[in-house]
Image (cartoon, rainbow, N blue to C red; front, side):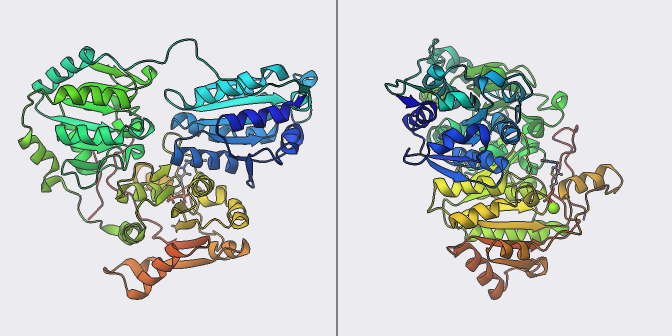
Length: 564
Ligand SMILES: Cc1ncc(C[n+]2csc(CCOP(=O)(O)OP(=O)(O)O)c2C)c(N)n1
Ligand SMILES: [Mg+2]
C-alpha cells in the first residue's frame, strides 16, 4: 500500500522532477512528511510567491517544467500571481496545492479557498483531485499539458485526506492525449504562398518572439534569417535569439524598442512573425500597427492568430518543424535583392544615438556590468525602468540569457526567479537587476539565497521612485508624482547585511565619465566574480527616463526621444 503523498512524489520523479519550490502548511503537510527519501529536493522559500517565481525561473532557463507547492487558503492564493505570469509568458509550470479534506469542501472550512475556481481563467489546465486513484493520471496529464504545444501553467489541487489515504500502487502512468499533436503544415501548403508573398514584397521584415527559444528552433531560425537577410528585430522574450552581430539585426522592438526596429516595423509591407503574440507593447496602437503590411504568422497556438489584425498566411505548428520546411524550399527560390531597403532600415541614419540625459550613467553602469559578465551568464530583470534599460543594453547571443516577467509585468519577480535560475545552473553567473520598488516585494528571498549560499549577484537600481510610473506621470500627468516617491527607502546595503549578504553601493557619479576609473572597474569585477551572494546598490538619478518611448495608444512611428 502507498500513501497518496508518496504516490504524488513518485509521479513527480517519473516526470523527471528532482527540484521543487514551496512552503508548508496544514493541508499539504502529508506531502512534506513524505519528502524525506523521495528523491525530490524541496527548496523552502520565504513566501509562496517566491516559490512560484523561483519555479518559473527554473523553467524559463531550462525549458523543463517548474514545480511549486503550497498549502490551501493563503498558501494557494499567494501562488496566483505566478500562475498568471506563467500563462502570459508561456512558462511550463505545475502548481500543487493542498486542499481542505474532501468532506469539508464547500463548508467555509479553515483555510479553504476555491483555488481551482480562482485560477481557472489563468491556467492552461487544472484539476481538483476527487479520489486517491486519480492521482497518477492527473499528474501525468498535468505535466503533459504544462509542457506540450504552447507551454503554460497547470494547477493540481489535492484534498488532504487523499494525501493521507493509501492504495495499492503499481507505478506512475503515461498520459496519451486523445487527439494527435498538431503537425506542421505540409511543406507545399504554405511555402509556395510564402515565397510568392516574399517575391512581391519590397520591404520585408522579421519579428522574433519567445516561440523561437521555446521551440528550440534557434539554430534553424538563425540559418533562415541569414538566408533572408531582411531587417529583423525581437520582442523582449526574443532577445538573444538573433546573433547581435548580424548586419540586419535591429534590436528590440516595441514601446522601448530601437528607433530602427520601430521605424522598419511601421514601414514594412510584409511582416514575418516567428512565435510572438503581438502584444500591445509590441504593436503600439493596433489600428495603426504596420499599416501597409501583410502578415505571415508562424505560431504554435492558433488562439494567438488574428488578435491584432488578420494575417495573410498562418503557419501553424512548432517552429522547429515549420522553419526547416520553409528553409528547404527557400533554397530553391529566387528572391528579390532587398539591398536598398536593408541599407535604409539598418543604415546609420536610424542607428541609436549614444545615451544622453539623466539616464546616461545608469545605462553606462549596465553596459559596464554586462560587458564584464562571463559568456552565457543569465540576467534576470524585474519590472520597471531598470528592466527596460537592461533589455535595451542586453548584448548576448544566449536565447535564455535574459529572463523577465514580460506579459504580466509582475514586480517582485526577479529575485526569486534568480534563485530558480541559479539552482538549475549552479556554475552560471546569475545577475538579478531589480528596482528599489520591486526588490521590496520579495526581499525576504535574500534569506533563501543566504541559506543556500547561492552566489546570485543582485543589483538594485535605486532611483527612489516607482520610476516607470513616475516617468508616465512626468510625461502624461503633468509631473503629478502621486504616490510614487520612495525617498524614504531603507538602506539596502544594511538590509543585505542583516541577511548576512555583503552589500555595497556605487554612486552614479562614478559612471559619468568613460572609461570608468580603475577603482570602479575593480569594484564591478569583484562584485561579479565573488563566489558569495552579493548586493550592489546603484544610486540612479531620480528623474532618469527610458527612451525611446512609444506612448501608450500611439503608433510605433510616434516615438519620443530623450530631451536634448
Ligand atoms: C505587482 C505590481 N504592482 C504594480 C505594478 C505597476 N508598476 C510597473 S513599473 C512600476 C514601478 C517599479 O518601480 P521600481 O521597482 O523602483 O523600478 P523602476 O521603474 O524605478 O526602475 C510599477 C509600480 C507592477 N508592474 N507590478
Ligand atoms: Mg525605482
